[in-house]
Each structure stands twice: as structure tokens, then as C-alpha cells.
Image (tube, rainbow, N blue to C red):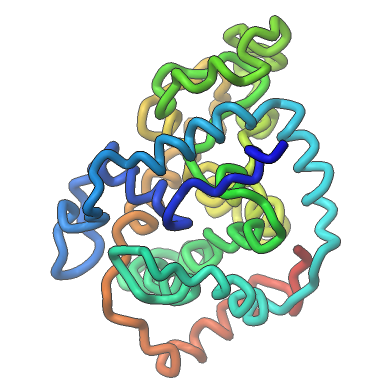
Length: 289
């Protein structure tokens, strides 16, 4: 349907702007800027974000997720080196972002550099560099509500702590007895690895990276937008002990994602040798998209 293609956000990352209003975090990663100084827009009502979540919650059904998984997880659209992939991603440069005029790659480089400066393992540095690579879905024609946004399990009842939970009433799964119970299609303690999340860049980049990075990195990629879990403590009944152990890594990663932006562009010429060696250490010469 035509409404399915709407892109209500003024900025691709505007949902992240809204996160900083909903989920302030006292940890300050970036230098010279307080968290209250991030993500300032003239329109505090965030109407475009609200419309984004109306579409997201209406159309992210269990069947929709399964269809997208079957389509995109074939990885048969493009084959590129990591550096070609970043050039491709840079087509998403966002002139309306209030925090930075930098390209998508430069933002990711800021995230990875903040992680590196704090002395974390090199695989986590690479995770910071790659974590938004899944946003190339927009360049394959996907609407924003199927690429970004808070993620949540499909196939079971929606948590009331998901942002704008009232919009789920328009989702066709909302009144479906197969999907609208506490456990839905799952079993208690089944583990998040057995739970299907709403479709977007998190799941896509996880699937892209799952053979190359260690388990903590994969949790960072797959669940960094699952705020109902790692912020609100929801869906405990679906978790297993492994999820609980990995949660600390997701908590460690998220402040770097949200607070690493600053207006100073990284000096790529000084950093190039390090990152080329890092990518070569962990990733194949070409990635499939």
C-alpha cells in the first residue's frame, strides 16, 4: 500500500535524537559537550518521530519480519569491499542532522575512535565502525520505519514500555490469538537467539557480521536498539542465562553509539592504516549485501 512507503522522519537518524530525550544517560563520551546539548531541534514535539512510530508499529508484523528475513538474508544484492560499502553508505549524508555535518562513515569513525580511546578490545572498535552499516537498507528502497527505530520482539504481546505502545492497536497481530499472548509463538526462557525482532538495520548487520566477530560484539549489533530490554528491563521471561550475561556488553556499547558525535571530523589520513589493518584482521575482502 502507498502508506507503506512513507518516510516521515526529516532526518534518517531523527529517531536517535528522540532517544536522547526519552533516555538521557549521564555518561559523557564526547569531549566538550554535555548530553543536554545533543539533539536540539526547533520542534520539541517530535511529530515526525511520532508518525514514524505509528507506521513502524502498524506494519512491523510477524509475517512482515519473516518476509524481509527471507528476502534480505539471501545477501544477493551487492558484493563490496568494506570501503566500497562505506562509500555506498555515504549516500545517506543527512543535511538536516543538527549535531553533525559529517558523513555516515565519519560518524561511525567517531564512534569507533571513542571506543578505541577508552582502551576497549579491537573487535569492539570494529563493532563501533560497523554498527550502522545495516542502514544501507534505505538505499535498497526500504522505508525508514523498516530500517531504524527501537526494536522489539514480534510474535508475542508487545510491552507497554515500548515507545508509543498505543500504536500497536493498529497492527494486525494485536488481536491475533497466536501472537498476542505473553509468550506468543515462543517458550519461556527460550533465549533471544530464538526470538524474531522487528526488522531493521540491527538484525541485518548482525546477520552480515555473525561469522566474523565475537559473541559480545554480535549482541551489541543485534540488540543496540532493543531499548525495551536493555533500558526498561522488559521481556525477562524470554531470556536465558546467556542473554543476561551478554546484557553488560550491550550496556557498555550504547553510550558510544548515542554520545560520540561532535563537529570535529576524524583525520582519516592519520587513522587509515590502523583501520585498514583492523578490517583485514576480522573481515573478508568483500561483504555480501
